[in-house]
Image 1 (cartoon, rainbow over the protein chains, first blue to last red):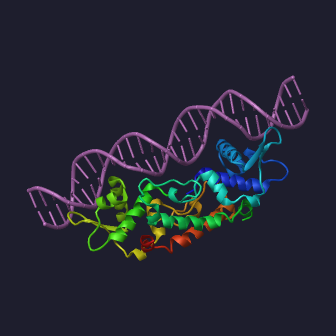
Image 2: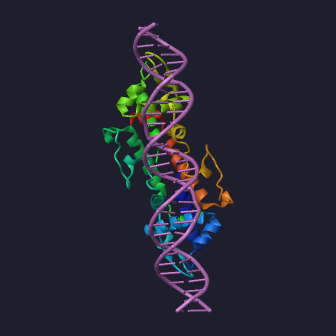
Image 3: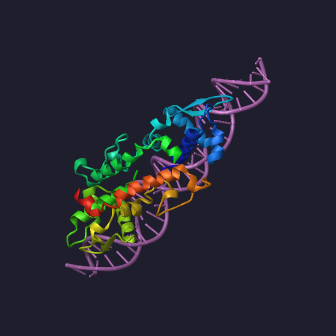
Length: 137
Length: 137
DNA sequence: TTATTAGTCTAGTATTTCTATAGACTAATA
DNA sequence: TATTAGTCTATAGAAATACTAGACTAATAA
């Protein structure tokens, strides 16, 4: 299950992708329309900014905007930034790998092999879908 | 990410599938060989018993055993029992569905549609893999 | 220059879930 | 009846989640 943070973040990004004309999009506009707690959303958008997904402008006429073309941003990237690893186990994560304390030999672990298959399966879909795809669904 | 409970549970099931001759398998044997905290494992196996995956026998010569053919038990079933929903969002879960508070119209929600695709993609793999497959990997 | 708008940043907190552990109890077998 | 092995209740520490409060800073426009 994705955290609420991730869900809110994705909804906000889809909203921004849909409504990004020349002007940046207000936090409060997203918060109102998507019914996301405003203070929580602030933190989430700030996080997306720190990860280079969003840019922002302060003051009147300010708000958030995408830094890249929605076609260039994959669902895999967004979920990784917001939620962390896509893999079901740390020992098969490509970006957040961690060895299992209990496992004496990863190469002989049935679970490791299986979860690597699951990871590849999920990744193949999440990497081919972009924010553009999500916004037009 | 799967919880440790789920990881331990799957490892234990694979162990039982591999070592099930005529005799049931001891909790302590699994605990030792797979390095799973014994008391925790007890609770996990009990849970699997309550869900009709495992049977048990008390006293000498006792232990846990599979109630069905490993070929009949899918990875999807096991992860659902141990970890809960496979879906990334409650609103696309087939077995643990829950409506989103914030979403006014699910049919118009981009995220809902996308996550339903992800669910189907994952499910297609997890339903075709059985415990037998996991144990022989 | 100052009022207003709107994002930034530092804390902190309540709740829930996860990961166990303790210990008494019950059932089966030799 | 002693031993083995699973059952049940109950609890507790740690970590993650889901927020909220409030002071601060930057940008714009009158």
